[in-house]
Length: 99
Image 1 (cartoon, rainbow, N blue to C red):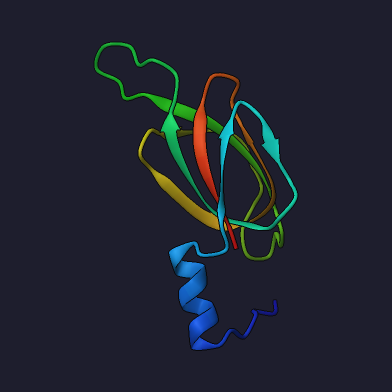
Image 2 (cartoon, rainbow, N blue to C red):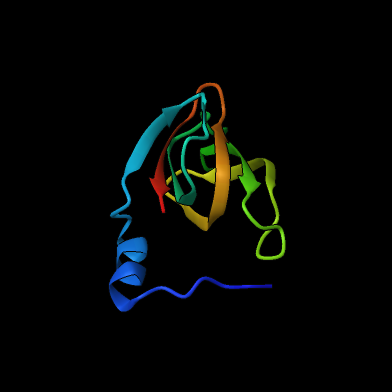
């Protein structure tokens, strides 16, 4: 397993999401490498449950992390990783950070 060696400035840029971002509504993005996903809007919750959005993502390196398949992520939650493609559920909205 090989890890990238970043300069201090490069690693700070990755943490801050300065590589840019995309707002994704019920679609797939796959033109960059993505490092974080924050679910902004998800399915309506039933009584006593929290709203969540559906996220699928293709891992850049499965030695570092698995791909995600229809993972329910609570609204307001950010998940981190390195993905080559991210799909957000049909009625869901997420901000996807490039890295």
